[in-house]
Each structure stands twice: as C-alpha cells, then as structure tokens.
Length: 321
Image (cartoon, rainbow, N blue to C red; front, side, top):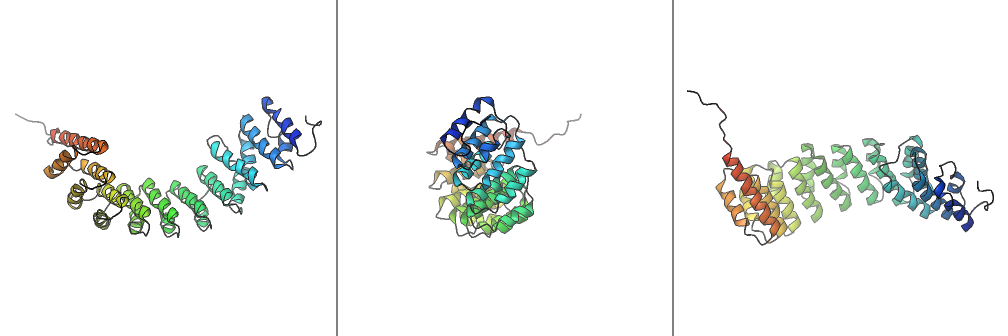
C-alpha cells in the first residue's frame, strides 16, 4: 500500500498518510504510520484514525497508548482525542491498561487525562482513586476528586478535604454538593471555616444540598456578616434548608444586603418559607422593588408560591350530613 513511500519520517510519509483519508483506513492499515519514527507522522496518523474510525475498540486502545508516546506533541493529540471522543470510545483491556500506566507518567497533563478517562469510563475503584490523591500535581488531584464524586465516595472525599491546595478543597466542597449525601455535611462544616474564601463559600452553598442542621446553621448565620460577598451568598443558600426558626430572621436581613447576589440568594431561600409567615411575605414584597431584575423575579415567584399554599385546603375530610 505504501511501498513507494520513504521508509520512515518526512513530508512524503504525511502526504501518503493523507491520501488514505478518503479510504477510511483501519487501525491495521495505519499501523506503520502510528509507529513511525517521526512524531509528525504519528500525530497525523492519530488524527486520521479519529476521523476514519467506524468501529472504536481498536482506535480507543491506540489513543490511550499514545498517552505514553515519547514525544509531547503526540501525547497532546492523544489527550485531546480522549476528551473529544469520550462518548464513543470503547473501554477494552488494552485501553484501561494504558490509562493505568499513564497515571504514573512524568507529564502531569498525561496523568490528569488518564485519571479523567478512567473515572469517566467507570474503570477505577475508590481505592485506586484514593491512592492518586497523593499525586504531586494539584490538577491531577482535582480530577481525582471528580472521580471520587462520580462514585459517591464520601469518606475518601472527607480525606481529600485536608489537601494543601485550595483548588482541591474547592473541588471537594462542590463535589459534596453534587453527591448531596447528608453524610457529607460534617466535611462541609470543616470546609466552611477554611482559610480560603472560595472554599468557605462553596462549602456553605453545598449545605443547601446536604442539609443544614444546627451546627451548620450557626456557621451560616455568622457567615452572613462576613466581608466577602461570596461567603454571604453561600450562607444564604445554606439557610434555605435550615430550621426556619433559625433561618428566617437572618435571611430577611440579608434581603437588604449591599450585594445583589446575596440578596438574590436570600430572596430565593425565603421563597420556600413564606407560607404562614407574614414577616417573610413582607420581606418578599419589599424585594419586588429591588433594583436587580433577578431579585425582583425571585421575590414575585416566592409570593406566588406563598399564595398557592394559602389557597390549598388543609382539610381533605369529606363533609357528612
């Protein structure tokens, strides 16, 4: 098929490779190009394979193996293809074996791509991911946290909450919100007192998904006075699911916050607490005149919901003569 082309490398090899594009070459037909000594040829062969493939098991294994290529530009193409073709790749034995080997590669980008591919294709266990939390690169550890989130690994996420990198702790807080398991609340309480503003804010916001019991509610009420608006916003979101006896008064105060995002979070939170509470309805009615359109919209929705609750009859007994 390519006997007239130079044996290895050079522009003629790439031209010969490109001539095959319209023929939809198979992995076997591209093998000599995929192993060419010239990284430009190998890189082009990967791209051709990605465009020509009809069955994905063999190409999937090739793309994963290319993460281990000695040339960084070839590895970069492999990383891109693993991400772009995620929905069609087939996770066979060679695919997963190459990914696991790539988790120990010196290139942090390769390790990160391998971790992502492993957890997105459900090829790893909680134990394997937990071991990867020791990776020296924080981006890899962040991806590992996402993998743990996909497995609802609450205990492992609790351990990752002690990471030295704020980005990893932030991923944990957001991940616990995504899992939405009340068992994650204890970790969020810890993170709500983190040294990093964004971590604290995310932890407070996440409580809206895991529950905001007494200790968490105490933290949220205190946080409504924090100088950082992100933290006040997260606190308002958390109080939406707290005991109304603890939440209503501070949320009403928060509807007058100087920051529109905080006011919006407070009004949204109060929207579910208006029924039977005249003071909440009064706060929502005041918020209808807010300068921000979103705040006004959430206030109107809250009032509408409150009116709907009032019109529903609490008595479903059938009248008798």
